[in-house]
Length: 193
Image 1 (cartoon, rainbow, N blue to C red):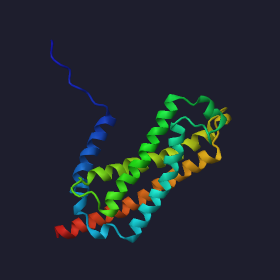
Image 2: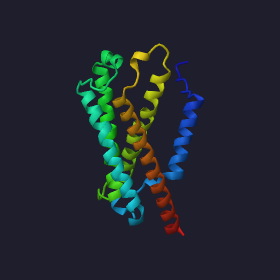
Image 3: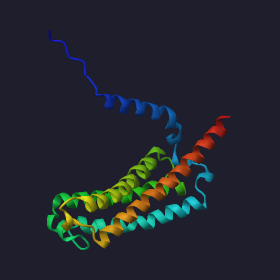
Image 4: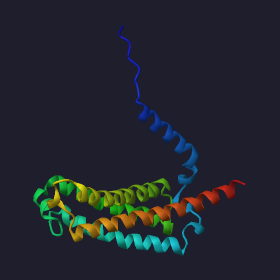
């Protein structure tokens, strides 16, 4: 019997697929459209202030991690500096990219710059960038503080500040995103009525 076996998905894969379908149906109107079509009410003074704070805060991890990506071990603990190599530099360069994505996603949304740029592009950048910065900013010091027998890898003051700023950046963008989506959903409901 030369027939193909049906492809079997695990329960997790099916659940992820169903969640993606549900999210697309439920929330896709919120990320449809163009940046130029955003309402003025979605980018008030508070949103601009948060975006400015995020842009300034994102400079710290972007700068420090760019230095680390370039091979500098300044500010790293002795254990991390000793193990530092090409793979570490690539990881640091990715964090620089995430910081840039954070700011690049917020600017078009808050300042309504981007014209015909599809809305999903800055939303994706403003989602992935700060989510990665924030979660890794919390994860790295947590792991370093509880890793048994790895005290030499500890977190130095510059590392701790970098991780804290990453978490704060992620939380600020989360708050701005909640405000953005709440306002956009209300505006779309009002337009539909």
